[in-house]
Length: 117
Length: 110
Image 1 (cartoon, rainbow over the protein chains, first blue to last red):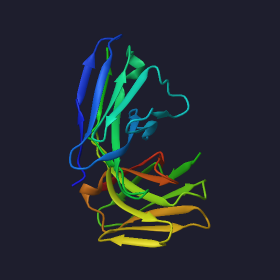
Image 2: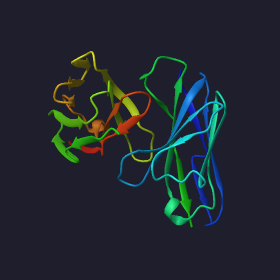
Image 3: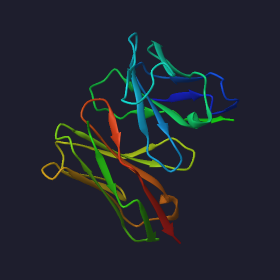
Image 4: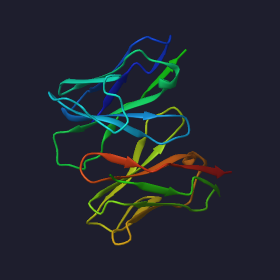
């Protein structure tokens, strides 16, 4: 149980393109979803927290107009990287929490490798 | 916010030996401490976690200890095997958000 599907797994596109990444909870309702970014040989850095039906909360230093997050349903959150540039190339990972008490394990997606040429 | 420090950054052990990774956290409100194993290009996988009302937890070859007073927690892997080679991350949480350590690259030499 507690499967999180992330799509696509890999994106290669030209500079200036907008890229949408989907994160779906397949067998549970995710009240909260998290988006992380991980550069090579570095740790996971939280970008934003999204709750179903409300605006995402962004971490300090993360541009909300560049990284658009939508959490329109209890099973789907999307991250759109707008006008992507080479410095946005990274591994993006989502995770989800279900309708349970706090501090339950976050369930991670498989990640999306984004490469901007 | 929470600040998690992790040491060492790299660890090389002989197969069969033990590996220990240590983390410290800054926020006394943190009450959940998971450990993740991440292989190259893959998602982090939860290997063990501990909550603040417990001092130690063990699952086969893996154990975690927590010292709330000192604000540090450790991962212990015994009888290491080549498949234990990966990057390990500790994390701390005071509500829903996780703050990760910088990671430890563990290499098990056959």
